[in-house]
Image (cartoon, helix red, strand yellow):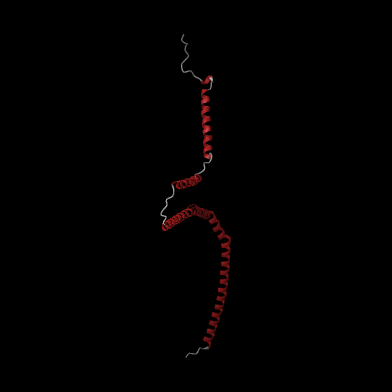
Length: 191
């Protein structure tokens, strides 16, 4: 067993006091570092709200939003003008075939057999459907617009070119004596 002498005990107490002071100062330092980290986080949040988010929003609105909006509009148009009517037509056709089959089954079960539609009824329906279809096709044809900007420019340039040709012809054919030169030298008329 070793017993510590006073000198060693005193050194150990001094070392313990130093360690305790160091621990306290480290706790204060860690507390201050946590406060600095909290303030930095708050400032980063402020910077993010004030600068980064508006810049990202502006970039999105400038570059991505037109394409996203156009894509949504095209998707809606395809869905509303193509998919839904086609699906409705398919479902409607299937239901009418189902109804016709059920009607035929019920007639056969009642002993009446299959009755073919009359020629007049078929002609009437064909005329009705062709009238509807021609009206729809006429609505789908693009409407002819008046003369466009290109046509106006072409007319103006054509007018200018025609005026230039007419002016050149007038200059050539006007009756100025000094402009006319005889082809043959002067000779006496034949008598």
